[in-house]
Amino acid sequence: MPGMGERLDGTVALVTGASSGIGEATARTLARAGAKVAIAARRKDRLDALAAEIDALVIEADVTDREQATGTVERTVSELGRLDTVINNAGVMLLNQAADQPLEEWQRMVDVNVNGVLYVAHAAIEHLLAAAESSPRKVSDLVNISSIAGRRANRGSAVYNLTKHGVGAFSEALRQEFATRHLRVSLVEPGAVITELVEQMGPEGVEAARKRFEGVERLEADDIAEAIEYIVTRPWRVAVNEIMIRPTEQEW
Image (spheres, helix red, strand yellow):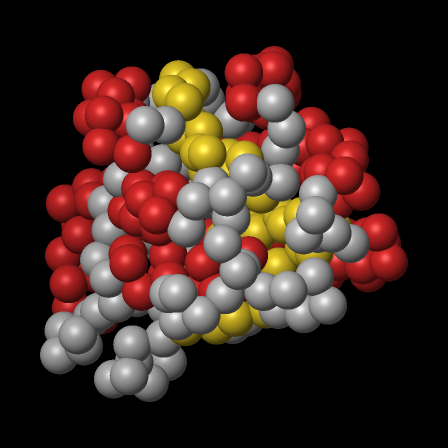
């Protein structure tokens, strides 16, 4: 897929959750495609290391804070001049049986996976529409990163399922609303990927994930980044609404 689409020279992309995993890989990929990239996350040391590699704008921010999320978008536009592409990637996955899980973990998933996505999207839409009108490419992109958990529910992931189903519905409604204005809204739903998401779950969660993925060669972050690159480098007439990506050996 890389190299088959349009170049992104002269465009600006914002990637949230860019300090590791899919976000980090996507920032690299979009920079190689020619975009000027703003990278946002809470871990500034990680962002600084990535920025030294790809010459990106570093924005230390927590997207669960509305002012910080809005400020991230506004700073990107102010310092880089425009906003053509947003990769709404920040997310957390805290899996556990509902009866055993603290309410704080439920709230954390809603805060990051839902509110963070909403805050960034709300702040970005007017800039994305403006970019679509002024760009020679005639198009802009909002890509929301979900999960196969947004397609099917499983025990032990009730609230994670809730958040990801919500992202899917939100994305499809936005897609319909902005299609004729050349703002493409796309949804990417990865299956099992080697990222730090699993490590956020604590020892019991990590062990449960290990057993669940045993025997499955998981996807790598670059696999998802290449799919995102495919979406945002299509000509304006081509909208990739949704991509689900599973490891070949993943049955569920």
